[in-house]
Image (cartoon, rainbow, N blue to C red):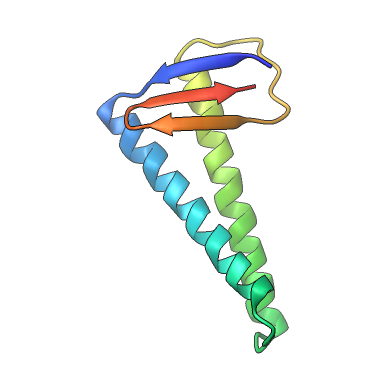
Length: 94
């Protein structure tokens, strides 16, 4: 596993945090849905929640790939990405 450290510009930091919070917010919503024993959601709500979760996950990962491209990391095979984020500094484990 390779570790790539990216120092984010203030603009990149804002976009990264926004994408991250969108994705994490949906993770919380899905967890709440799954952990309640009261499945009072209809199928339309469940489908919308699932589709939105997938979309936010896709947007988050696309932004991580975009950051790699912007920092000139080319010909890097990315099967999965783990990350550590500390204000302004992003470590990607690929």
